[in-house]
Image 1 (spheres, one colour):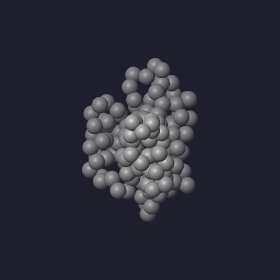
Image 2 (spheres, one colour):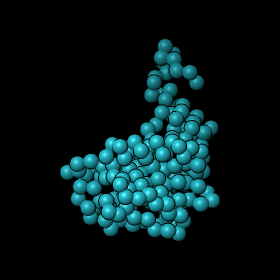
Image 3 (cartoon, helix red, strand yellow):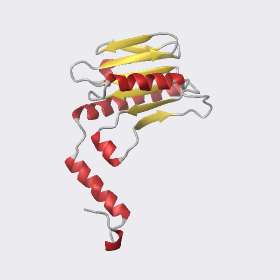
Length: 167
């Protein structure tokens, strides 16, 4: 269906038709669905942490799949911004299996350069999901399925199991 204002088809109707077509013809790939579920679980854990830690702020982003790129959706999935925050303490990046690692390396460096002290990369792999935690000036740690990760010393007391994210 082509958008033709002269034929009485409004922009809202045309956009709705495109979204329906995309839902039918470009369903999200399985790793995207898995990443969204992992993001929801991690978001719940971070929200729980935010209730105990005034001033805690974070954002969570995912690489856009072909469906999102077609519709022009943003890649921001979730976040929490505290009223009295001075800046984000954490950025979470969800890496789909078809996104090159060099893309995530660039994103991690950009986040750290902007002053975000902790970056978590959740690597969505069907064989072996992993979580990599980058703490500015401290360490980079990789956690495989079955391990529990933390963000010390920036987020004291926060822990989460990799298995919990992908259960």
